[in-house]
Every structure is written in structure tokens, then in C-alpha cells.
Length: 310
Ligand code: ZN
Image (cartoon, rainbow, N blue to C red; front, side, top):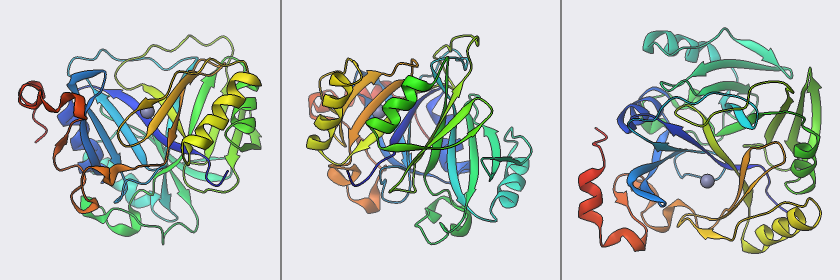
């Protein structure tokens, strides 16, 4: 196993245009793929990431114009953490004030400096200062100075009733190791990748169950280099952890299997290959509407029902 950690995070949002305005316009992420929900081709699937859309930077949304709001609770992702270089949080706090982005005061967690904020659908996110990442590529094409640009995921926090079985899968299947505890939260960290390498598991027995809707995370995808590594993970999940895993599905930019981990969170394992430049060059990622082959014949009908993004 060479690379561990998060491949992408997929969430549900309200109106697509507002979602693009926030993630591209306010956060300065790159729209790296504009496609449709393969299971519901009359709606978008929007992917944001760094310049080349590398695994570990990809936040995706199913925008539904009339989605009702979700509620954070047991069996869900509580917060999605994004990395920024050291010394950037003051700049971001000022930007959030200027843009009217709801945010909390800068706080400390696991020895790190964190700025929690919410997107227009109430999705909980945070910016986390990480030392030594200033030289990693950021996307400066979105109007954010390169030195402050978001550098992909730091990690996610999950809210579960009791986290030990979730933790066992994170460490045994995905190669994350326990790296600290704060209150009822256990931090798991990948040893060999810095980007998207953290999962905080918060045991919160007695909380209400979550309700999926706008502002809630739909699933977390972990990385597998290729089909063989994915198959090895599936074998371990089924044989050692008694998990039921779906058959592989081709998502054009990666190949995926899904399972609901014991804490109730929907997990995916996505291959690093082939990546987002499989159907358009890196220079123009996200500019055209990309459809999988099975929907290409219906392109004009699909384009007619999708809402305008700008
Ligand atoms: Zn996914």
C-alpha cells in the first residue's frame, strides 16, 4: 500500500449556482469536473479540487435545487477539514467577514489551529493550518492568492454511536493508525500521505441519528491505487470485518465500491486511476459538461433541464 487516506468527499447541496459561487468564488477551489449524477442524469455532479484534481483534494456535490436541509447526527460526517498553509487563517477570517460567511472563532484541536465555518447550505467545514505545505501546489486561478489557497483535505470527523468498530476498519483496511484522543474523539492518521490523511471518530452515544439533505455529507471515499488494491481491501472488509460491499461501479474518473461502515457512515473505495484528465485536458478541466457514454445520446435533453451555473 503506497497511498492512503481520503480520495474524495461527496455532499448534498441546494441550488447548483449558489454552490459554484461559494466553492469557486469564495473559497477559490477549482471546478475540475462538471458532469451529471450518473444515477439521476437530470441533476449535476460537481467536483471541486486543486489545479489537477488530484485525489485528496476532491470535494463533490449533488446539487438539488429544492433539497430540504439535512441534520447532522449519528452515522454522519460532522465536519470536513481543509488544509491551508501556516499563517493563512487571519487572511481567511477577514475574507469570511467580508463575504458574510458564517464562521466561529479560531480554535485549537489536536494541537492544530482551526477556523470552523459553514457553506450556504449549513455544511460544516473548517480550515486547518498545516506547517510545511506552502510549497504544495494551490489553485491560484480562483482569485485567492496562491500562498493562502486551500491545499486539499486535512480530513473529516465522523459522528458515531461507538467508534471502535469504525476505528478497526480505518486502521486494518485503510492503513490509518490511532494518533491521539481528545474527549470522546479518537484521531486516526495515515502514515504515508499528508493530504486527506485524517479521520476523527467521535463517539457520541445518545445523539439523534442524522438526516440526509442539503448541507450533509453523502459519503467519504478512500483511496486505492488501482483495482488490485481495491480488491484486496474488499477481501479484508468481507472476510475479517463481515462487511457487505457493493460490486464495482465505473465512475469514469475512478472505479468504486461502497459499504456502510459499522458506525453508519457510507464509505467508498475509489481508485486513483484514471483521474480527471481522462476526458479533458488539465488546462480546461471543468469547462465543458462531461457525460458518461450511456448519456451522450441524450445530451441536448440533459442540457435543457440542468440549471445555468453562471
Ligand atoms: Zn464518491
